[in-house]
Length: 89
Image 1: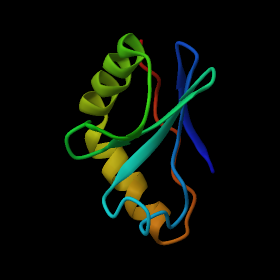
Image 2 (image 1 turned 90 degrees about the vertical axis):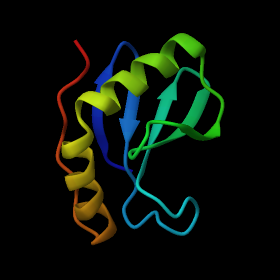
Image 3 (image 1 turned 120 degrees about the vertical axis):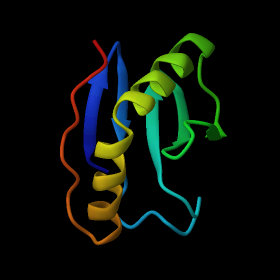
């Protein structure tokens, strides 16, 4: 699972060809022991649990980088490695 960004202790990753489980463009976020899946389309929490303050950071990052995430998703579903995306600053 390639890491595409890291900020404030949150690791953002995108699996190659990960379309069976969630069926829509998404990212995986890890923070300490918490794991969650967020929609790229609307930044909603699709699966897992995440601290509320870290959820807001991930959602803000998705809003800022939605176009980059959509391009990375297209690469990932075709088995290509997604590009790194700048962290939230």
